[in-house]
Image (cartoon, rainbow, N blue to C red; front, top):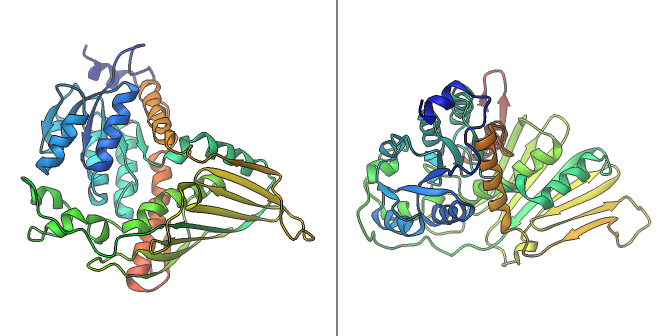
Amino acid sequence: MNRRTFLATTAASPAFAAGQPIRGAIIGSGGRGRYLTAQFKEIGVEMAAVCDVYEPNLQAGLKVASSGAKPYDNYKRMLEDTSIDVVVVATPDHWHAQMAIDAVEAGKDVYVEKPMAHTIAEGFRMIEAVRRTKRVVQVGTQRRSFDLFQEAKQIMDSGQVGEVRLVNSWWLNKTPPVLASRPLQGKLNWAQWLGPAPKRDLDPLRFFNWYWFWDYSGGLMIGQAAHVVDAIHWLMNSDYPTAVVCAGKLAMDGAEVPETTCMAIEYPAYLAVFTLGYKAMRYALVNDQLKQFHGSKARFDVGREGYALFPEDPKAIDLKPSIEKRQPGSFEPATRAHIRNFLDCVRSRRDPNATVQMGQSTNIVLSMAMEALRIGRRVRFNPATRQMET
């Protein structure tokens, strides 16, 4: 009986014998894909296959992957390789859900970059596919595996903050004034890259700047809110929102998605606000983002690389934290810790730190924010129909 047959018949047993290597593959070997390839390889995964529809990215990915890795320009052909155990999806957002679904249907466990999906319907399809196939899928929201954030979660759960009715959050940085404009340097399968997106003539501007076009992404608003909103959900023990409003200002020439936005997210018991300001000055990473939980007993500030609890003191001119931790430069290992958690769950068959259910709660917020911004109205979520309503 081969291992695939064994897995299908013994779901409760560990998938791998002690010391047995895991073979991995990457779909999408752009900058993030190559970074993840290197991280998986460093931890001990044999990165046996690389798939990309753009020849220069494919060749660059092969240089990072394990010696002898097989090249593919069609991910479905790659999924036919029964020796591959785990698949990493690091493509543009509009491909995340379908590739993850196809991978679990092919018997693979999946590490999928955030955001988990590009629409609400896609996210529910992912949940159903994971439930049906019993595969392990980790969403790439690495704060859930970061020890500093895990400590922050314990502080929130301790009751020291009190009842929270308002969460303020932001992420500040700076974008270039215009989109990158450069020619293709090699073969590109444009039709396959478009995939489920609307059909268009080959456009290198869209290809190199997909983050800034609605067909493929929601831009930095979605890319950064995926982390921040997920962390808010985790610390607040939240699930689906009730409504979202969103406003934005676009100052980047050639883009569709604004780089300056503000979304207000309504939940049954509190309001969360996330502001993205990517025409601001640059900050050190320790200072570029913050989540402020305004509780009835204290304010809890959680940044990228630190946290501080400020107990109520109406007489204090300068509030002093009762608990504080600040570790500049500590965030880099978070991704590796998240990958280790995924691989541990591949072996044990336990749920990972960032499940598809958690990813979908955030995806619903992000999808509603995109819709609210584009139509200029408040958008509600109906959990009975699993759809947005305007």
